[in-house]
Image (cartoon, one colour):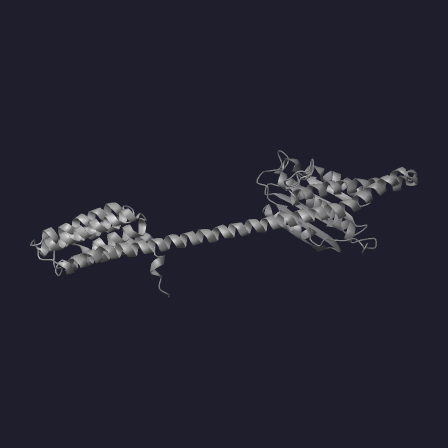
Length: 391
């Protein structure tokens, strides 16, 4: 197993390690250091205990860097603890960027170093003074360099994060512009075609076909379907191009139909010539709106697929609202008329329904059944929708 880099350690673990090392060196140094400051001449265990106490103060060096540095500086005069003083100066240099403050610590540390040395070495000279200066200025300079490097790295990381956010915003803007372009193309192409279809159907209703009841009903169905398509197209346009909403067009998700309109879907399908039977058990009108909309989309897509892929087949819609959730089965028999191969298909109807049901925590399956086709869906609703008193 690879060793964990020291730089990746948590700060408190590093502080614990530094404290233990400094305490150990302070105790060991009590027997060999040339001076013990004002404690010179006292028993070695007393000096060692004082050095250990100074080292323990480094545990708070990050939370109280200045207080610890002042304490260690003063105690350096008393017991001469150069290792603890160097660690305290390094901490101040890495956390404080004020040069005046660092200069003041350097002067105070140098004075404390000389005082601590002369406490045990009255004849300390230039060599000892240079040692005291290096023991203070060195850790301060190294700590300051490390702190500046850390600040530069943090600034670079922040800059990278800003650039990533900017790239995400640019990508989102590009996607929004692409959606707006798609919306305009849909409006120009599909809207134009459907509008012509609606106008042609209206012309049939007022023309010679008006005297033929069947032709008039067919024309009315075409015109009604075309107007509904235009309404849904405007809703989709509001979603794809929210920055340029048309008058009266919602800019959020389409409100969508509710489950009580299933009877309207069935009536419309019957008017197109489909044989549709609807059986409802329970009260779908009290279901949550997302569930009602999902049911409407499933039934509508199933009836459309049956009309396209099984012309002339009887279709049965069974909706049961039970305690555990909503069960919906749409079954069609085998086709009795030739298929209309020129009808376009997006190829994503069942896939889209499966994703919609999955978002509601349900499941949807579809496949051949007794020579026809069966689509079965289950959607949990979290509330009882059965008739009062039903088990």
